[in-house]
Image 1 (cartoon, helix red, strand yellow):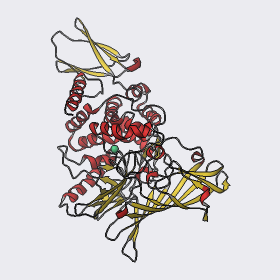
Image 2: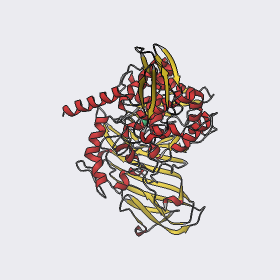
Image 3: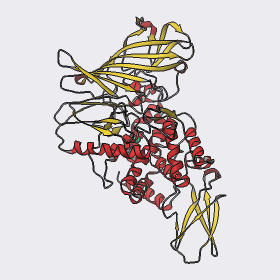
Length: 577
Ligand SMILES: [Zn+2]
């Protein structure tokens, strides 16, 4: 997801998030906006015990979209296998979408068999399931899904119109989860093996979606149904997009020997801008395949669709709403960021939202890394330094306990999962070197250091698992590094003291955690690396010599000048009100 600006985050948190958490069945306000329960508003909260007893195997999702009424109707056919015996299914679904019928293995249930008071529906099964048994639940529902207040950050349905007045519709539900528009188990590790989608839209509109296109059916009245098959979709990555799209397509010949179909669905009448963005797809793909590894969804497609909202990493159908903005870095950073999430979110999915930084820190690090790939170290460092003043250090990036998506985004480290996460990776790379850094990343993403198309599957990862891969590839115990950078809020501070010609440097950390981070010191232009083995080291520096600490900006550390700049910017923002 695109990073939310600090000011916008503060206003959204103040206006809308606090009431949700302050009340039991809080509401996101908005004119005519029906109540959103706490259960539905939060993605990835605690599982119901009955949900822990099942595996979510696959889903077949029929949708009809009614732009005039801002409504949808759906028939979801969900396949589960019991891991333990159970007499019920518990399925998350926004109660704004009332269920009209449920069939279990083809047999209709009486209405008394299900209830959905809070957006978590309990379905009593006609007969209990034994461990290992499978069951099919067909759920018919319809209604007005919650409208996004500020997509993608406060998400839901986006009922926009194009400049010439046609419906332009999208979903963006990372913070709230799949249950905003289809019945699912809204927890990161409950991805189905595959999802089939059948999306019916009014005449003249198209519905690009996840995975492989399986053809379009035209109904007698001109409505069309668009059929798609998506393998291993991330739950919040399943998306609806409807509009009068035009399509650009091409084929990328991968360095791994396979061909990858590429598509961009954009609005009409945009001149040559869509072609210019499409021209970025192949070189961006080549960067990722060269530096990280194979595109994870090559057998499906690379897909991008233009949206009214800023962006979202919907699997193989990334949302793009950056208005073709140009930057001095030479590429569209929003497209690049969302595409990075195909590796860091859709292939490697955080097993709990407490590990959100595994999506956003890595996803944000990929833009400077692409700048380095294109232009060298200068561009890389420039882009890293641009991110540095955004780091707030108010909460640890990782808490060590399970979190919902909004716990992290609004009550936790928030933007630090992006900029601080990227700086942690930059610092780690400098510490352990490129070979260990990229191999540990590949182990985390693919489960192997030699990924090739067809030899890996999507994975769930936690922060401790990532740290274990780093330790394995770097050949040491780097827990101290992550204890300071991920599990502490404050940045390490390098304190200097002078005694005659001796200049002594000492690391100060939150809770006095050990921090043997080597640091470069330039004295009159000669650079010495201090080992800092016990967190301290001295160097002989003549009086009057010119000293620069960490002259290549390798290390994320406390900085008086950044602190002063942040204070100045905060005061200026407050003064502007
Ligand atoms: Zn992102």
